[in-house]
Every structure is written in C-alpha cells, then in structure tokens.
Length: 273
Ligand code: HEM
Ligand SMILES: N[C@@H](CC(=O)c1ccccc1NC=O)C(=O)O
Image (tube, rainbow, N blue to C red; front, side, top):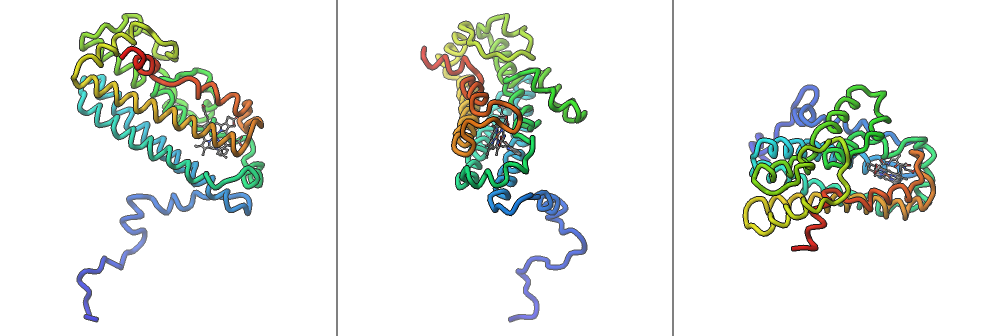
C-alpha cells in the first residue's frame, strides 16, 4: 500500500457534502414517516413519492413542449415530448414497487391514511390539465394552498399540449376546424371532432415532421392511459370495490377516466389510415 492513493475520491468535507447540497438527499431521506409496523407501508410511501417526482418532471417537460409548440419550434417540441414519454415509461414501471403488496398488507396501514387520497395530488391534477383533461371542480380541493392553487389555475386556464399542437397544425395550413382553434381551452375536449380527425389523416398522408409530432403525442396519450389502467388494476387487486379514502366510489369512479383517453382524434384517426 502506497502512502498516497492518488486515484481515491476526496474523503474530507465539512458540513453537507457537495452531493447532498446539490440533490438535497438528506431532505429526501427525512421524508419517510410510516405510522405502522407493516413493512409495506414504507414501500407505499416511497412509491407515492417517486410517482410525485415523476409528475413534477412531466409537468416541467410538458410546459417546455407547449412553449416550443407555441413558438413553432418543432425540433424542441419533439425533444421535450420524447423526454415526456421516457418519463412516463419510468412512471408506469414504478407500479412494480407495489406489485408485492396484497390487500391484507394494505389493510394493515390503510386506516392511518385517514382521508388522504392520491385524488388530492396537485401535481397529478396539473399533469392532467396540461394533457387537456380539464375539470374545473378539481381545482377546489387545493384552494387552501394559495401557491399550489395559483399554479393549478394557470394550467387550467392555458392551452394544453394538444391545443398547442392543433393550433400549430392550423398555422401550417391544415384544415383544423375554426371552432376548435377558438374554443375555450378551459373545457375538456373529449368528443371526437370529425374535422380534426380529417386534419390528422392529412398529416399522416404526408411524410414530414408533423407525422412525427402526431406519433409522439399518440405515445404520450398511450402512456397516460397505461398509468390510469395500471392504477385501476392495482386498486382492483388491493381495494376491490370499496369506496376510496377521497370519498369517491373507488373503482367505479376511476373507470370513467380509464374510459376517456386524451387526444381523442389521434385515436379515431387510426380507423381511417
Ligand atoms: C394501494 C394502492 C392504491 C390504492 C388502493 C388507490 C386507490 C385509489 C382510489 C380508490 C382512488 C379514487 C379516489 C378516492 O376516493 O380516494 C384513487 C385516486 C387516485 N390515486 Fe390512487 N390508489 C393507490 C395508489 C396510488 C399511487 C401509488 C398513486 C401515485 C401517486 C395514486 C394516485 C392517485 C391519483 C392521482 C388519483 C386521482 C385519479 C384521478 O383524478 O383520475 N394512487 N386511488
Ligand atoms: N385512495 C386510497 C388511498 C390513497 O390512494 C393514498 C392515500 C394516502 C397517500 C397516498 C395514497 N395513494 C396514492 O397517492 C384508498 O382509498 O385506499
């Protein structure tokens, strides 16, 4: 052994290491507070926190995609949407963390959740709004948190990524129905518009970058549906048809969003390609 190991990392720091300062890993480590002795409660808490972090990353990149679409910067929009899809895949795979959890294990700590429910996730709500799944009533739970409420209100009031994309199609000369370009973007758009299906059909008839945008947005919609469906089946397995802690009917309530995909015309257009 030589006296000085020149390949070794630095070993001496005073206070928080630069890694901890940059990542706040100590703050993260202090955020796990189980209330029971059931080992799976820690799994549940960490899985939820991991999903919340994914929601924040998705919001960040979706906002980037929307800004790029507004600026007619398709390469940047495409790159941001590709990051969104990669994050969504990671988000969906984080359900694996809860795969080992049975109904019996969940019931051992469910009472300690009280009236807490993922339904109250402000980040998930912002994500849904940015994807165009708007619902004014979903603003209400957050009114007691002014900063959160203001951020959510902004996402509710502004164009979704789908609105921004169809506005771009309109500017590129595609026959997007005028009523859709001037619509109130605070309303959900869940009924397929035949004129917009035709505009997407024409996009796919071409070979340009708009086809790539259509496919990238379809991938976003597909991954979002997958998250909703995997959540739904996890609830089926763990909770059955019991009412939710958030006060909803549970499975029956969740089914409505499972049955309402985002970017509806991008699904309809498959039938006429
Ligand atoms: C044991 C696992 C889980 C069960 C049994 C469960 C159950 C439920 C139920 C019953 C609802 C309906 C609202 C209510 O009345 O509470 C709901 C909504 C929701 N849950 Fe979960 N959940 C689980 C895990 C998760 C996880 C890990 C997340 C990730 C953050 C999550 C996020 C959400 C969200 C965002 C909603 C609202 C969905 C919407 O608005 O469409 N859930 N959950
Ligand atoms: N709605 C669930 C509970 C739930 O989803 C939840 C409760 C507290 C903390 C996180 C939760 N789930 C996901 O975020 C239930 O009814 O059991």
